[in-house]
Amino acid sequence: MYAIYENKNLPKTLKKIPKEIQKRYEVWKRIVEMDGVEGLRNIKGFHDEALKGTWKGFRSSRLNIQWRVIYEVEKAEFKVYVIEINTHQY
Image 1 (cartoon, rainbow, N blue to C red):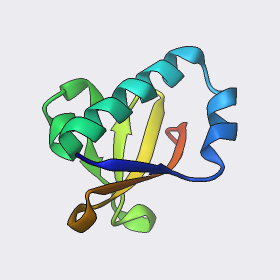
Image 2: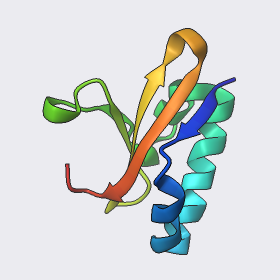
Image 3: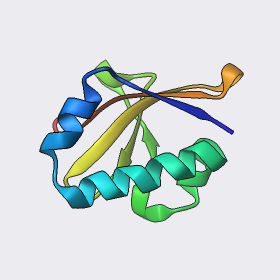
Image 4: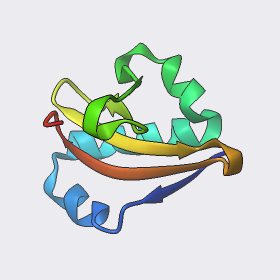
């Protein structure tokens, strides 16, 4: 089981994003808590992938065609750090 840690600014961001994306993020969190990144890979709609360039070392999952959740995984301790949720700007 993974523990999810959110960036301190994330609650403020969540208030501003559409309710549909908030709900999708909650589903994303439950999948990660139970099955980790492997669980996300089994659901094609999230299109989970490693990032390159400036974001190297981080991963991204789609919440819909426009919105992404960017996170980092610390497998040794089963921790997931959610950095931000944004429109596809990286």
